[in-house]
Length: 352
Ligand code: COA
Image 1: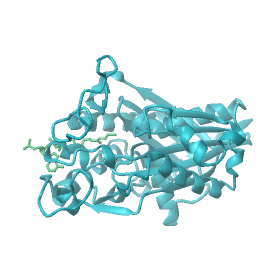
Image 2: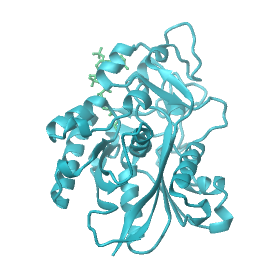
Image 3: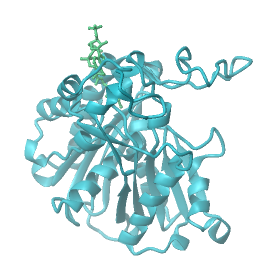
């Protein structure tokens, strides 16, 4: 039977580390000044979120989401020992695409130098923090049916350019960072139902769509973009908005339900899982999930302390981070649970 295997994994974060202590002094170009522009501090941020620092791209106009995706992809391809020219499908999850259209996957295809060579299929998916599990479900279905044989699954985000660096936007601004993670997936013959990608489930509840959103434009209106992009002080449309408490509650509920269902449907227990990798939105959310779902705390991997929330990138980035630390190894069985804007959520069990 054809089953989907993880062939390789890679991640990339930009070099600039932005510590909580710097945040109050950053202007909207990320330049540190002498005066406090945002009323916040390390104690508040760490206590409520578990975040100490995050990464930002250089603000030189030369780095886009596709560049972060490209770096993570190159590392995943090298890890898999797969040549970029072998990729026959790219699935890219992001909420911070380079442009409104075309999608970012085609830009990565071009930057990988395989566009004209392969003309491979390119999908952009829009499931925000849940994109990795949604993308994995697509990849798994494609591989099992024989549709594609070398799939590059990417989660990449450039958040730092669309945040509101002021007290007004502090609830959202302090949470997010830039980064990317990628996986290469392909088929292998196996009769072991526990091998490779064992389980994926994806869910959504559109009644939560406006509990966490970034509009930029409203296509039902004319003009459909109604703001002055040089005036960041007054424009609301260009920033993300969030009902933090509702998101917190739904995130806990969604990830607990998805994790418990993953075990129930596969007949596994936490003894069979090497690592639990939750989406990295807020350490307090993940602590609650661990408590409610009775997950052994020593099996939980987090990276939010160093990277903040990188949305579609958090799961592969976290696995790769801990692999580089020597904790995660090939053959480990991972249960990943995600929750994001939409609302969307889901879980997956796979062997690395
Ligand atoms: N620094 C300092 N104070 C802040 C702040 C910041 N960065 N952000 C908000 N505050 C203030 C609020 O203005 C409020 O002040 P007030 O009491 O004077 O009105 C106070 O802190 C409490 O705000 P509240 O929104 O009730 O805080 P909270 O305990 O709900 O924590 C979040 C806020 C954003 C940390 C929390 O709601 C959260 O993490 N939600 C989920 C977010 C998330 O995961 N999003 C991504 C999902 S994929």
